[in-house]
Amino acid sequence: MEFTKEVVVPAALSEILSRIFSFLFDTFGRQAPGARDAHRRRLEQLLGNIGSMVEEAEGRHITNQQLLAHLKALTVGMYRGRFALEVTDLDDVRNAGGEGDDDGVEGDDATDAAVAAAGKRSFALRTSFNKAKRSRVTRLILGGGGAGDDGAERLAAAVEDLESLTRDYMREFIMLVQGYPRKVDRPVRTTLYMDRCVFGRHVEKERIVDFLLQRPPSGRAPFLSVLAVVGAKKVGKTTLVKHACDDERVRGRFARIEWFETPDVVRRGGRPDQTVWESDGPEYLAGVRRVLGEPRFAAGRSLLVFEDAWPIDESAWSALAASPSALADGSKLLFTCRDADLARLGTVEPVVLHRLQ
Image 1 (cartoon, rainbow, N blue to C red):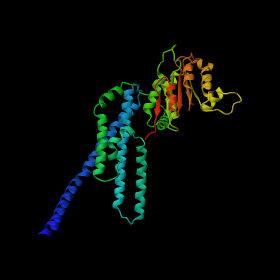
Image 2 (cartoon, rainbow, N blue to C red):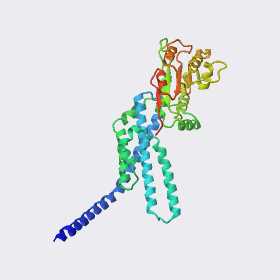
Image 3 (cartoon, rainbow, N blue to C red):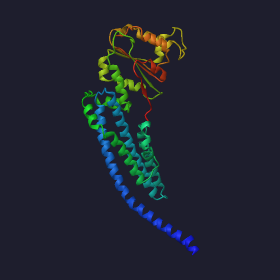
């Protein structure tokens, strides 16, 4: 009797529970592919709809900052959903490779190549993630690879994320976007080249254009209208500003658009025989002052862009900005810089660029 209680009964219960779990797993496991396909179809439908909305919005001159913020959220969500599809495809490739013949060297090489190719596509989309909005779906979308349930949950999370973006405001968003004028079509070669250079920076570009088109009050201090574009090295500050300056509205507003690199500005502010300059020295500000005083900028509205600006003494700059300038009314200054402290020199909120990730 003791043997029955201690050995036979636990073994029987273990076998029964094992069979029950196997039955449940097989039952729901067969339903996973259907649910996964349904989630995939829904996700592809949402991505198509959102993609067309983003394309329509990016083809218009939007100046409302709230609309631009919503457009940026839609763009980030679109790339997040595409990434979920890429990760699911990568899991399928891995699972297909695992089910193959382990002794086939050529098959393994082909699988590795496919996995590497899918990984490259996934990494390209991963760079478009917004860190602040990633946490809710990180476990499902960026979690370890798996088949069936994992893929279905990942796709379901992406669908839920996109539906939350489009559920409440999409109709109003479309109506408001359609109220803004369309951009003038540019030659295809130029459009493709410039759009690829500022990938993911549409909202920031519109902020710069909006600043350049604003009409500042004339005859009152500060007499300089300044915007700082701040970001790390090689984050795309110069490319973004060039793209904004190439906008037909900006080119039609300013009689002159000129760029000044740091060495040229420093040489203007230094002594004729000076060959060495300090990044925190007074030469850069003196060079900027001389540029602003050139008579050619008094003849018409000008846009002056100073690349990779050096640190400037804030009190000295405030005195310069509060003094009447030789620049024509409506002229603008753009500074690109890495130092966040230089953002305080602007007369409006700076445009801060972060790496796309």
